[in-house]
Amino acid sequence: LIELSEAERKELLVDDRVRDLTPLKARALASFREEVAGVIAQYTHSAPSDAEAVADARLLRYMRGCGYDLETAVSMYTATLQWREENRVAAVRDQAVSPNYVPPYWHVVNRYWQIRPLY
Image 1 (cartoon, helix red, strand yellow):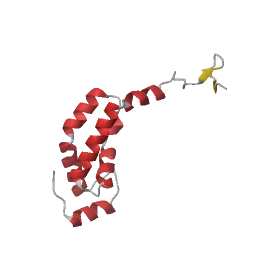
Image 2: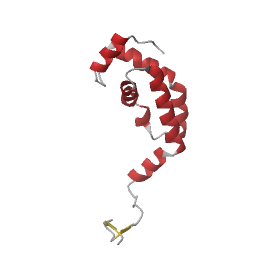
Image 3: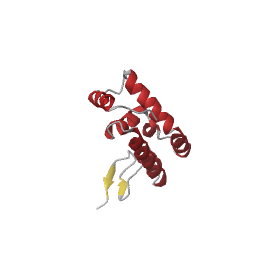
Image 4: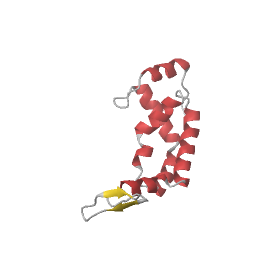
């Protein structure tokens, strides 16, 4: 991980862009991505449909949330991916967004897929 000075951290916190990254932010993101590469590879192997969990915007969110303290961001992001894998968050999300999903305690009223709650 790269070491950021206090002035660099303040400069990064002022800029909250996700596109057109400054060279400093791009360098911090590359360092962060390199540090969590193994965890990301393991997670994408178990949940290939959950691409948003490993996107640059998500990584930048963790870095900003930790005030660009990269060691803390790495530990928090690693714990999050482990939690998502243990609780099968990607599978639940895939089921919820599938076109034929009917929530529990609901039923299909007619052939046009009008879904209403059971009372």
